[in-house]
Amino acid sequence: MGIPDLKAQIRRQLSVEKLFAKEIGSHITISDAEVTAFYTANRANFNLAENKIRLAQIMVTPGPDPKRKQPEKQQGPERSGSA
Image 1: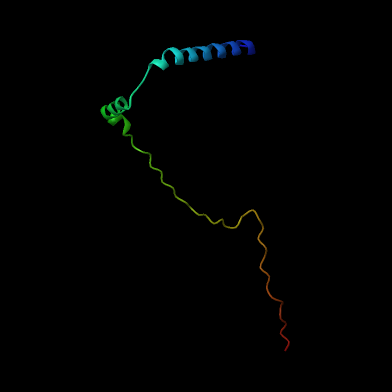
Image 2: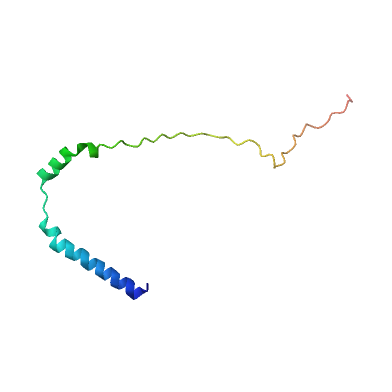
């Protein structure tokens, strides 16, 4: 399907939608009373359970990386036994 075919298809689709809105949609009127009556008659269909979401946060403190060489602890200067 080339660009010209796609444009023609979109034109046809828009024309059909416009015709439908003009010829059929304009003749349909729904009153507030009809909406209320429909809702009341079908109330069970509108009562849906809400999804519950629970969040948790886990804090992890990383330990020393075994691949990294840890600096060796340095001890103070050695003392000689002379007084």
